[in-house]
Image (tube, rainbow, N blue to C red; front, side):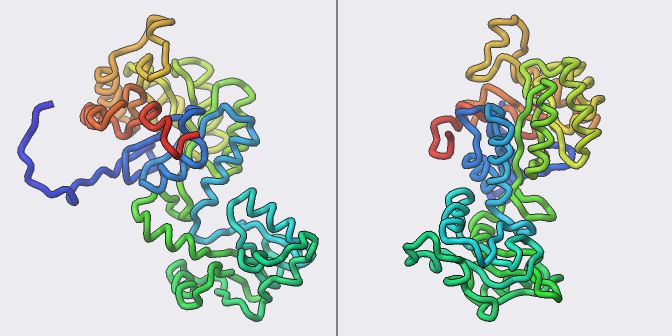
Length: 360
């Protein structure tokens, strides 16, 4: 590419972009659904930086859904389905939740479920000096009369102010009957301050996360589990995306889970792109035989030079308002710039992220 005249400052540059028709990112970076690249830890860090991670599918259905759930619960506005305990639960139950979900601030309701009457809350300091794992929660929880709470209908900004004023770690939100309807965490306020460009759902304020599936019949069950876990976008993962199997999967996903965006691929020609767009794809992955572990060009003798593939598919897909993700061959920041200049909305990175602290 030829250099031009610079007449703007660094802070004037806007790199926000669309991953799909409906999902906007603050940075055009996507981590690849490879088992050496993206699990929940990488997905969380990518979202905090304004990108998104795609959880790989080399998991059982339950484990992949659990990884998605970890990302969705990492950062919240109003937590509308917090893990709750009853006064009859024990210290051992609190420790189990801490190990499973990474936090120990747990609301206590009379039923042990969301929607029960709030009777107290447990924090890390409450359990720090309790040695007997069989001790009941009711014996060491902070009782209801010592809690600062917000009433149902409070705005997120008002709730945040209450948290700041009370200097508490958690703020329960209750209705007129004192039943728990939501929870807000101080740590989320800190994360919001430290990562102002984080990729978040517009309504829930949860981090955005994607997950991949294949084109086998059982992948329909996988997709349902991922949607139930809160996934924002599903990537149909195939080296050759223009197949009857993928078209059927995309059509099924759009009919069954219309609230979730679908990225189809991989493709390298406009006619391939057209078939996936007609099936309902909200975004496209472009690249064939280019990735660090991809052998499609060598084994199957099909593929295309990546710059040509990105340019021609992006030019065509733009007519339908469908963004494309340049997938493969990204080994430096210069490659990222070239992919975006050729028309890609985002770049998908695999080997560039593998081996980092956030990778598996």
